[in-house]
Length: 96
Picture (cartoon, rainbow, N blue to C red):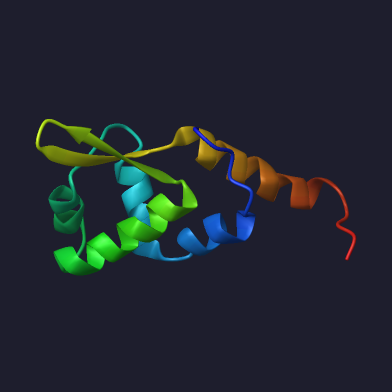
């Protein structure tokens, strides 16, 4: 994780869509191309690209260039950070 995310809201918004959650899960065990991810859903490549942009902005996915091709992989550290932040909500009362 290059930079620790500071906006849990942004990460949770990114995870609020079922297709985006599926893309994060699909890229967890290995990098995938956008076309591969589009094949996993019923969405157009353009729509998948918009979802991937949201996931990259949140830090959940990282874009890597390999030769002429671009691949997405899940940043496990961001997922773990978000999970810990959410877990903290049930561990202790939150002051408002």
